[in-house]
Figure 1 (spheres, rainbow, N blue to C red):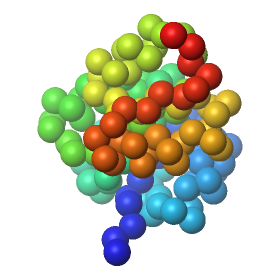
Figure 2 (figure 1 turned 90 degrees about the horizontal axis):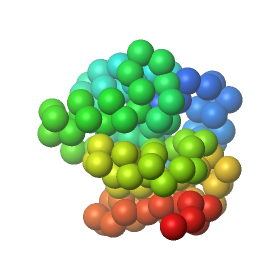
Figure 3 (figure 1 turned 90 degrees about the vertical axis):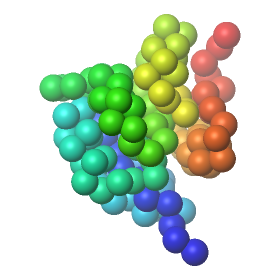
Figure 4 (figure 1 turned 120 degrees about the vertical axis):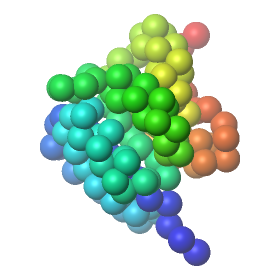
Length: 131
C-alpha cells in the first residue's frame, strides 16, 4: 500500500522537526519549507496528498498560499497548523479551502486524526477551538 505523502510548511525549524517526527511512522513526509511561496512551488512539484501549513509565515502567509493552490486546482488536502485559536482565523482557513485546522498546542493529539479525516473528505478542527 502506498503511504500518504505530506508536505510541511512552517517558518520555525523546531516545529518542522517536531511535526516530521510525529508523522514519520504513519506518513511519508516528502518535503519541508519555511514560507508560503515555497509551499506553493513544492506542492506543485511534489504533488503531495496533504499540505500541513502554518498561517503566519513570510513571503506568502499560509492563507495566501492555500488560495493560490486552490486556484490552480491542486489536489492536496490542506491542514493548517497554527498558534491562532481565534474563530476568525478558522473561518478564513476554511474559506481558503482547508480540510483541517489544528492548533500547535494540540499537534500531538490532533494532527494525525486531522489528516485522516481530510483524506476521507471530512473537516477536522482542534478540540481546543471553542465555538
